[in-house]
Length: 117
Image (cartoon, rainbow, N blue to C red; front, top):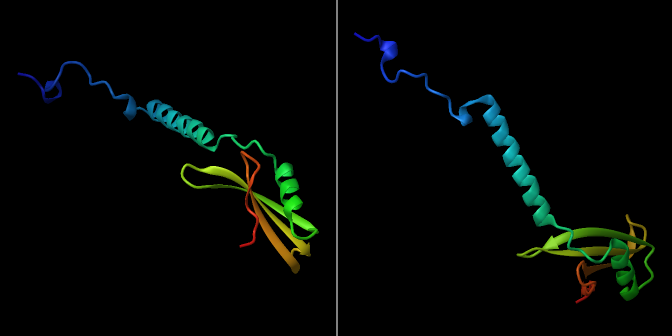
């Protein structure tokens, strides 16, 4: 007569890789590596116009001589496209007397929006 321990198979059951701590760590590392590669691929460095070039372009079309500028990098649309948003102020940042916000395409360098209707 066989004992209850012998019921099933005669060889001990091997644990699946997902059940082992090392296997779980390897799976986590693989997922994180994939996410990193995917985020680098999506973010890409497709902007050909530098921040300085965008400011020069924006100041060139400004309707006044700005005292201060502030620049932000932004992606818009589906698929996303990179833009430089250049804010120009006359006066101080806290109390500007004039403001103009210019959007410059970060790939072509063209002015997309000059900030006026």
